Amino acid sequence: MKTDKVDVVQRRVNLMEKEGVNFVVYVNVGKDPFYSLDRLRQENDAIVLADLPVPGRELTGVHFDMEFLHANTKSLLDSNHQDGKYISAKGKKVVVIGGGDTGTDCIGTSIRHSCSSIVNLELLPEPPRTRAPGNPWPQV
Image (cartoon, rainbow, N blue to C red; front, side, top):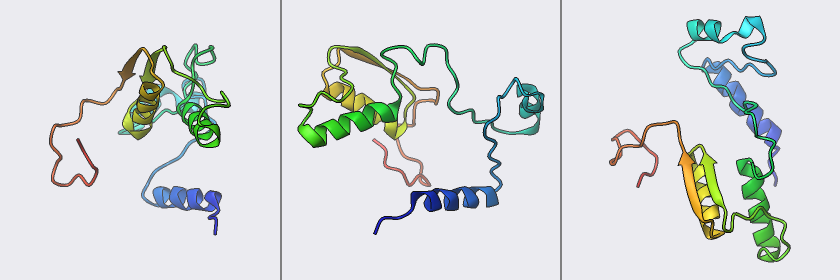
C-alpha cells in the first residue's frame, strides 16, 4: 500500500511546530520590512534561508541536485544510460555546492560518469575523525 506523502510531510511539519519551529514561507527576506535581516538576527538564535536566487543559477550547466540525481537514476534503471536522458558529467569540471548525503551522491555520480575534476564547497566545518559517543550517525 502506498502512503500518502502529503500526510507524512504534514505530520512531520506538525511535530516540528510543536517543538517550536516556526516556518515562514513565501517571504522576500530583506525586501519585506517585517523580515529584515537585522530584525531576524535580533529575534532568533539561528536563521535558515533556503533556495536563494543566486545570480547565474539559471545558466546552462547549472543543475540542482535532485534534477541531476533523478535523471541519472531513471536513465540508468530504464536503459542503462542508452536513452541519453540524463545529465552527463563525463569530462566536465564539476562543482558541488553543499555536502551531506545528497552532495556526496552528486560527487559519486559525477565520478562514475568520469568527470575530469570535482570541487566540493561546504560551509560546515570538517567533521571530527572519531564519532562522539552520542552521535548515532555512521561516520568514516
